[in-house]
Length: 382
Image (cartoon, rainbow, N blue to C red; front, top):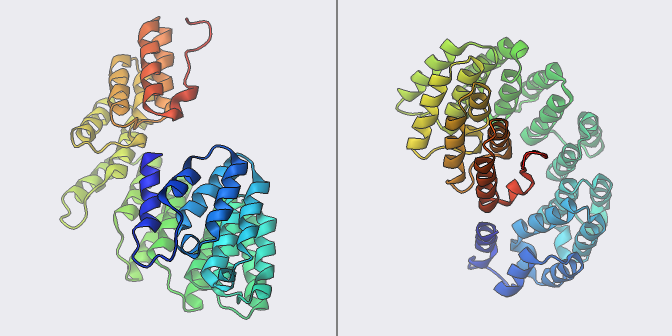
């Protein structure tokens, strides 16, 4: 919460152009208030200040997310509908914020209603507003409605899809499992004079390389990207590496990583090495997986995903002590390990009747991060 507070405060407490803001104490109370009724009232009170409405974008997101996560949808509605009384709603950016927040809260009907109300607020329904509504459909998992809605709204308001419109549609197609339709959007984009961006290719490559049967299609898109003049960055190479791992091409995967390590302009990152670890684990090569992992630890470069494959794999192969040591390393770096690997070690310790060690690990994990609050010793083991 402390780091979250600092980020939110920096967003709207240090700008030289602010015009009246609530006190820092009030802003902090919005972050920590547990009584949702009081939270709504404090938020509405703060909204009366133009500086808050103009700059507290992250706090809007944070508050709506908290309320939606707690299924306090009437409170989300109360906060967002309250914003419509201000002249700010005539501004494209402010209107888009309301539409987007309703989408993030899973309240699609309210997002649609807000979009339809825009003329009443003297706000034009621009391509950006349409894109916000399309994104709201994606956030609410109405993937099958995205492409038809884009066609309908573009015709109705005489608009032309932009790069963001197409990227949203591509993402929706992939969510539906319509891979051919997603790739076909590239042809439509180029036909309509909209050049695909790296973001467009990120989306496509990530989805194609994630499935072994679509690896060759991913290679075709890679070639198409390079021919278009776009230079792949490390994220693109990580997607390709994932494709090689998924298809079991470990020798090619290792070669790709070595090429990246020798590339002066582009170096592997933690995601590169995490994928390599996953590949070695899939291949049963635990020695190499441990070597790569240890190198990450030495450079203090691990993240949560670094532990996800290797720890359970070690448990399965009987290397419980090594798995336990890795969990302790992860828990010693700000709780940088997910629940799954820790639970795997706890279960392994219990099977070996190492009850006290299991309890100690659970206590350590719970002391590091609330995410481990549901971590448990299997019933009947104590």
